[in-house]
Image 1: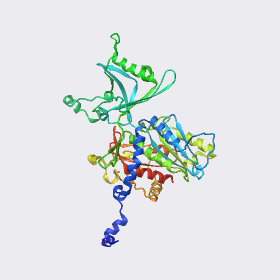
Image 2: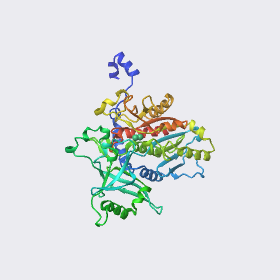
Image 3: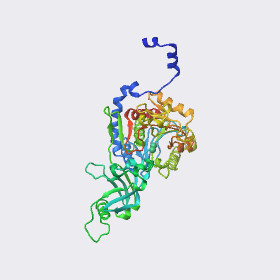
Image 4: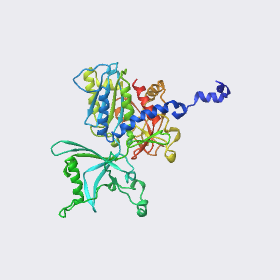
Length: 467
Ligand code: MN
Ligand code: MN
């Protein structure tokens, strides 16, 4: 009060009329401890969810533990019932039935669980000069030069000739071997250094070293390649032809870790967008008796444009919603037009080292809470879902009612680049949608950085939205 008296008229008017976003650590220091606590579970989640399939398995196990049952389209459901549906092992929908009729609308929260990586080509194995290699085809937007000399783990699935499926995971445990793409030594990189950074390593140079000991038989023409095949056959019963029936993803063999002396940050692979997925699943668990039915979706293929039947461009979610409508005897179009959706995806955090690409007044900052992104896209908002003022108002009101610290953010300066999310696909479904998610440093790098305070407040925002 005493301080207030000292303020001039202008200062008072300024307090009344102006607005600025602040670091949570400054205005809500009591949230530091709970944020650190919350992220212990997050790190564990990340370590068991390197790929979309693994993330689905993790989510399914978590949901079962929380009492969710597998969706049965022939069952009848009532308020408070919780169930889940898995689409082709790569896409999960978690439902909590609300008190209100379904055609009062659903609260959707959608995060994606695929992340940029190096996929093996369908015919990946070869040897060159006594080294056995895998050829790769990168998935999603990567800066290729970052993937050289990064320890990699091999994850995936192979369908054998007899139809049996084998899950592959090599390189996550300390006693397991890793894999690596080589890069030139500085002594011989004079020519490579002249390449633009985007070609620092080229797509066809992302070749993964898998072996360097020959199979002992002088009559074999490719003994290094054969040795790799033998080892894979011993472990998984697979042959070279089985690569054509496989999905194998090479991802950074790195565990989630605290970053900084103050442990304020999390470093991990694939935080885009499993950081929002974790906040979303924890919020879904927390809100047990929502007014509106909640549908929390964990989707695949966002990083390549949401294509395919496990991505949001497909009708998989529509079909699931139609199933729900049949159960409750309502029309899907009435459900959709009364629904609201958070497209929960990360945004680029302001990076002081690369300040040039950001416009500071409209950037998101580490520690300022979840970023509400009105529109994404490129150039003149092309490819964007431009959320309405009303939708912004509704989501901001939810957050402020529960003291969530949030911020706004654009993805960099106008015409600097751009990107998209799943928001536009929910817009296509006639649903009011806006992007809300965690700001990330070094997005799409093998090791991405987020703030624990942001993760915690994103969780709080999702809870407030569902409540
Ligand atoms: Mn994303
Ligand atoms: Mn992304």
